[in-house]
Image (cartoon, rainbow, N blue to C red):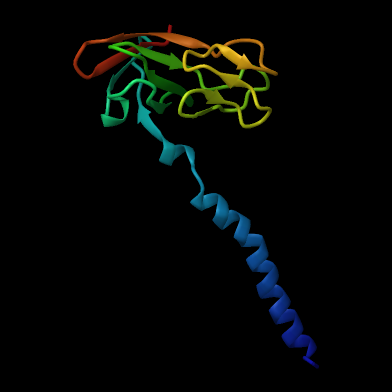
Length: 147
C-alpha cells in the first residue's frame, strides 16, 4: 500500500492526538474529588455542622467532606448507634488519600489498611489516621470539631 507523505502525516497527527487525549478522557470519566465528596464549610471557630444524608443512615456508611474554605477533607463514618467518626483521609505512611471500603479503609498507594475508627490494621503505616471529635444531635446534624 502506497500513501503520500501528506496523507501519512495527517493520519499520524490524528492518531497521536487521539493517543494523547485518550488518557485525559479516561481521567475525566474516573472518580474525581468533586464527584465523590460533598462540599462543606467550617466556621471560624473550627466546627462543621453537617446534615447527614441517606448515605449515613446505617453503621459503616461514610461520606467524604471537602472543606471549601480550607482545601482539606474529612471522612465521616457512621458507627453503631448515634455516634460518628471523623477522620483525616490522608495516610500516615506517605500522605496518599485513603479510600473507604465496606468494612475498612485502604491506602491505594502502599496497601496500608485501617479500621473504620482509623486504627492501623496492616502496614506499612504505623500511626492511626488523625481523628476529630464529633457530636450528633440525635436527629440529623453531626458537628465535627476541627480544633
